[in-house]
Image 1 (tube, rainbow over the protein chains, first blue to last red):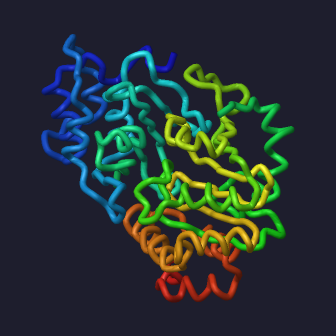
Image 2: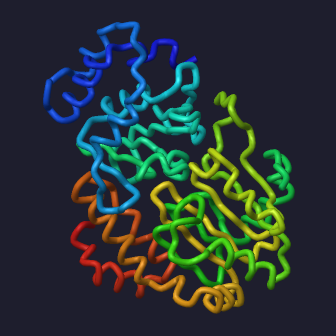
Length: 140
Length: 205
């Protein structure tokens, strides 16, 4: 089971928000490792909303873009994933995962993509009208 | 609709697939030798929606005219034999045209790189993670497709494809070295060269 030790399940929302958005946007300055070390019983449930709010459209209207590292991308992914559902990526993509996300729709994480950056795949959420982007790329 | 096991795919569907595509790889020269017409389409989303034209409807109509009664769908990114995957073990389907709406219900399959292809091997459509698609087939198939959707395969979309990859190169440092070979594979060396020049792409290589 790959998510026996989830990075962000149960973390305090304020801390995670500071960690994620601070890490991504250089605001509060919490690094991923700092966030990993913090424990809380409160389940963070709106990482997806946070991700959408922080994402801008890139060169393609269905591709979102957000500043961040591979660690940020994986953090968002694990934060959005329902506990117990993270699986290796079907395509055998090294370091890639898929999981059930919001509304039990499949989300994916690829540490790198053909176009370069780490990517969160949101195809099902896009088709369900829950995300304006099919994928979100983390721009280094 | 029925699901094919990997063994059934190999015996029943793969021979048709390999008439159009020699390899399941939308990035590196996938077309089989002898495929008469080849085109790159962009942007083509997994569900074949969000296009300015009804691609799936046209495929069904044209393929019906060629004598097909359905098409296969195969996920390119199949798991390694030793990997574990507990959600779904289906990687190949046959969809009769009478049930074509089932294409949109394949769920997670639509998140993967995949190929739609004719049981007769007369046409095939391969769709990548980055929303480019490669369509190949007989000249008669393309003639009918152009009749159904005039201009659907115009090369203007190649310029959009190159524009996006220029962005990926400059913003993300993406590897674009595969693009000239792919375009040459699809359009021939001379036209590919012109496309790259027109898009001011060559300086990136």
